[in-house]
Image (tube, rainbow, N blue to C red):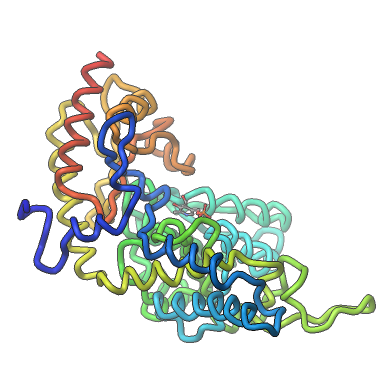
Length: 413
Ligand code: PLP
């Protein structure tokens, strides 16, 4: 086996054998899946957990006294335990299970931010955020007569920390930052930002969607107030996610969705609500999906983030070096600390044309604005191409991708 593709701690071919989809062909070519920041592929352990749930345990949660109901509840609540362990939350009761980061951010926007915002107040975010970490704040800010402000970034795609700190004024009632940029791969210094926020009594929301697939996260060490994650980018099914929030915040937050499962007693004269986290989990959740979340976390734990990070770092270095050899190619986002996400532009070729032709070569990359219009505006481009890698990718796939890129660029000339 090529020494580049395997370290003693990490056998990428053995790992790939767990991902059935990676073996398929696309347009007659072996698939090179480099769209992992969009959604990850799923190992058979996750697929089997979902399948097993429907074959053997399917029932609704919390409502039934029968055995299947207990098993379904155990699967759902087991995911809360696994997630709490995964991000080192101080208590499982601080984990609200959601459909993903979008729902988590909206819950914080409506339930936490909106009641605290007065006319003239502000929510601070950054120029590099995903729309899920901008638009919910804009909607509630507009309702309250408040504004959303953005801390600037440098040309290399790093947050200018002094500028962020300068904007932490008394009007700011919430600060919001991505842990890792979905476009640039930039890792933001969350611990340092949290310290600055805490010093000023400003709660910090962290969008961890792109961080949890790549690095161990410890919300207590980070020192933030809220941490959102989305399951489908970390090997788990779509429609799963979580919001971690400090207990004092959850206790003070009114419910956002009303319905079954989130009440203590319902009367027409007035309803009382369940304690957090159930207060925020109205309706029937994605139970099978959360069975998959537990399996996904077990999968990460079986590999270990040290091995994952060594392999992903080697892949990122290799991909960056190979792309730099391509004439007329410009990498957008060259932060000192990055996860394996590379956005780039090629002189004289449209990102979407390149992505379409790459697909015909079996290479799946994303082109477009990546739900980050303000970042595209900052760089003065409508779109980039983005190759986003995962621990199951290989050096050979990087080489195949670069070869395909050179081929399709020739076609466009
Ligand atoms: N935040 C970031 C940084 C993302 O990359 C994404 C997904 O692309 C989201 C939020 C939204 O996640 P979801 O659509 O799963 O809620």
